[in-house]
Image (cartoon, rainbow, N blue to C red):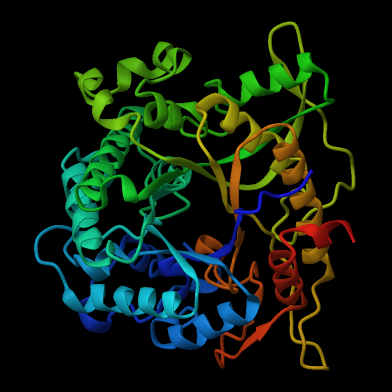
Amino acid sequence: MSFPSDFIWGAATASYQIEGSVRADGRKPSIWDVFSATPGKTFNSDSGEIACDHYNRWKDDIALMKELGLQSYRFSLAWPRIIPDGRGKINPAGLDFYSRLVDGLLEAGIRPWATLYHWDLPYDLHRQGGWINPAISDAFAEYALAVAEVLGDRVTDWMTFNEPQCILGLGYEAGVHAPGLKAPVQDLMYGLHNHLVAHGKAVDALRSVGGGVFNIGYVPTAQSFIPVNDSPEEVEAAKNAFFSYKPRHGYMWSMAMYTDPVFFGTYPEDFISQMGSHLPPNWEKDLPGIGGKTDFCGINLYSGFRVKKTETGIEPVPVPSGREQTAIKWYVEPETLRWAPRFLSERYGKPVIITENGLSLSDWVHVDGKVHDPARIDFTTRYLRELEKAIGDGANIAGYFHWSLMDNFEWAEGYRERFGLIHVDLQTQKRTIKDSGYWYKSVIESNGKILHD
């Protein structure tokens, strides 16, 4: 049991979380600029206005990536830098930034993986209805085309969306992320469908530039359903529940309602039976344009919960008192990386890439000038060992991106959560590679063999 010889090792970030320079070179506000400036919406009124100043320090950050031995780097593009109004005039300065970044990565021997949308919607598009307005799918396709025409000669690995469950579930249903709405179910289902249509159109736009050379993926998120034991009956029950439409936290927190349309070109029957009446009129005609055109399934995974089979399905196993937690109070469940990737691989028959996995800790620079984070090393060791088991079970797992490259703006949680392999002093912008960063370098160099030393 080991990682394939061509396994992809990397780390990930997102534009609004690290770039700063929110008014530089023609960039206009995103929904997160406006949301963060609204009192009470983020911890300590933190925002991405400066963040990690990556927009100005990208060369230094690439040097750190090289020191970490990264093979690949997943980053997102800021739509309001590239088309500030959301549609219409392209801003050359915004594209130039990403062009320089890509060139720098390639010069350092690091493979760029670009995500088109990691939540920073141009605010002007939000004022026109955002994801609830069907016109957004054409806007997104135009944006994808503008990016591909400039970067597509050097970037071949693309992701359309990051965590649609959070885009809609946190931003449009719960209202705790930008744009801060608590929309009715009709609007939520319109938003879901418009988002999926946008994915399909963006894939077409990318293909028009890169054809089959481009490797295009889609990145949902989930809590893993972990079977209480490895018996075939328990595993099958957990797998069925993982893809069923029985949201626990709201209408938008499910898996197959997003991934079945992308990979099969159909909505799941249980979703349609419950929510089909709320979808836009004639939604069926859009399905061929959504499905069957995506090369890999990304998945962002941090935690999960154990379930056991019952006569009618599954039920959660109670969490024992004192269960290990990260600083953000997510349970430590290493088998998260065994079961969810395996289930996705079996259902869709596509390569699965762990596009985010990591943890928040209370990290600081110690008196010796270093950042000692043994818990991150232990956590990641345990999770990657379980990912190896998924590969041993026969799952097609193609890569792993640690979240995150550096400490950054954790959305509504502001800067109180530190997920990075690199510590960032937000007052001075000094970067310090943590012990876990040097350890991860040895994981990459050994292709995971040191996980068992």
